[in-house]
Length: 365
Ligand SMILES: [Zn+2]
Image 1 (cartoon, rainbow, N blue to C red):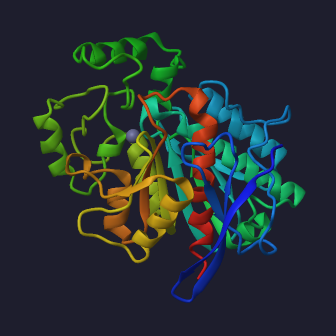
Image 2 (image 1 turned 45 degrees about the vertical axis):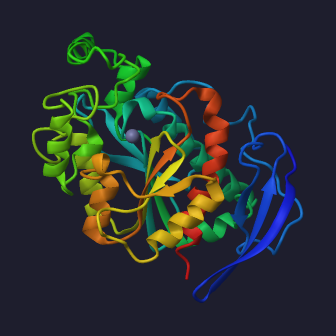
Image 3 (image 1 turned 120 degrees about the horizontal axis):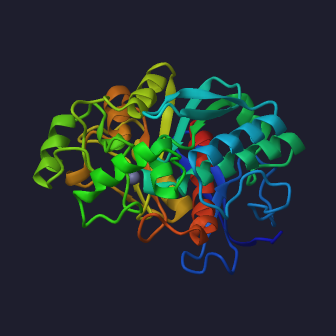
């Protein structure tokens, strides 16, 4: 375990709220960005030293050094639920191939949040980000230790956090060799063969039927269809095909229904890459959304941007914002070419812990 070196203490104020921030740098991992920070208002005041996480030890359930398939995701969630009986797990639905789309729920509070990852197949490194966060949060609850300086019990009492680490199990299996079906392998290869410029399987983002799950939502879907058609995506493809109509892909439909059946105050949709936080949909500016985005930017070092016109429609966060006028974010984690290599995992994870925690703490007013 490493010690963090405190770099700067700062008071952050917003309306009637104040919180003390502690900025630190680790000296090694974060040379480029130089600093990270976290909100300590739920801790016992300012701290001179913090334990450095994530803690890799033999007991860790969540592997961060292996590729994830749908099977590994499901097995990991099952093991977490066994070790931490206060976790609640289930499935939001099933994929084209009949695979479950499991979720992990932590907390029994009134405030509901939803984090999801791996909408896009070759962005699967986001899956262990949420799994690792679930494990660290659960371990803090078990031991009573603070979660990055925040009282984990406090979070548990106040929030019901639901996480779907892999929205697109079949697609991830295309990329990482977990399909175990010659028929579907053949189908995917045939779809990909029409797009020789997109590497296969590493360029695969879609579900198993060649539908881009993040272009399936009823928020400017017709516009997205026109934009993508102009780019040559008019039928099933490794990426960027919007489908024949909104919500025709069972995975997108499952996320939609699940969202409708809950009362999420804020959502995070994890993608790669770019180190960018997208917060806006068209002219919708949900209350506090920009303020929270800027805070996320501060704790992650990521840039806060408005979604580019060409990809500004039919995404999950677009629909969430349009439907609820509440804060919804697409987080583009990491830098490089998808799929990002596993040696980026620690960096991505540490950049995002502040977002994953403060999405909750910032909602307390
Ligand atoms: Zn994506």
